[in-house]
Length: 359
Image 1 (tube, helix red, strand yellow):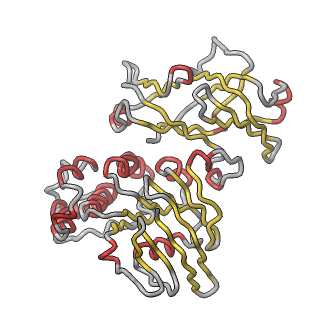
Image 2: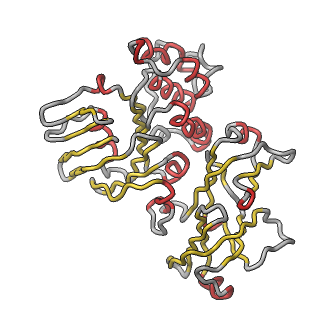
Image 3: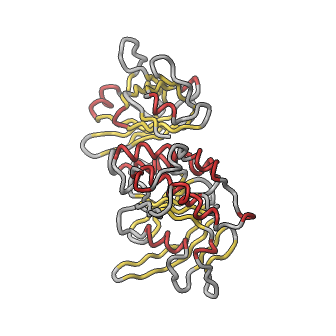
């Protein structure tokens, strides 16, 4: 577990936390700008020394009233919005900067492994001023990993990138924790990044932690802060098949199978027979009482209505379960629900207009 107890006052702002979470996967610190995410990360890293605070990593004290372990001895990797690469070194030189300074006995990751993991094979001889923003950020991630950190701290690593570059780097980030076996703490105020990358979410508001829950729990709440941008959504987990001649992949188990249209580049970034995420916006799902046959929507799934939630503007949110037990949210109008006489416990058909391959 990572355990933190700290109270930091800066002007009118106070960060007051007493919390812990498992050292596995990706933990997202989520909240609005100025809520205290970066202050909390700086305390974890040892960049901020706060009196009477306690920080422990896997049972080892990093800070107590009598002890303060400096950042270089905590063995954490840091990546910020800007890559901040060393301009006088090549890509290889930057990657090996921390690796050479890490005692051999502590090296858990090797350059070849990290270069393959982050798709840097064709970039190793380049100067850093020849890199795009996404390429530079991948090099920064590689440099941090090659110091063999116990913990990787990412402070909005995608914030400075344009939309297309974010899409290019996202698959690399999504595989980072599982392939490197290094736990990650990710700061973000983007619900999409949380849905694509996180295993659990720490919700922070005005310097206080509101809740800590795994992603599926966070996505099951009709009023989840993750729905502020695009409305309610579901994240489904499953295996992805190889694409057929039309570029269509099958996703999930047979009784709850979806068909996903992918581009060659997108399909190539998601290894078959590994757990993959699909993000489905609730507004992109319709309901039918019977399975329609003469319709262009290909994804028809049998679901059971578990709960019906009220939304603003005469809309309703249906919490349903698929045949494999996963939850699917559906947003419809009150009029549609009345016309279909929808009830909890009822079995209906979910017609999914589009799904987004996100991991």
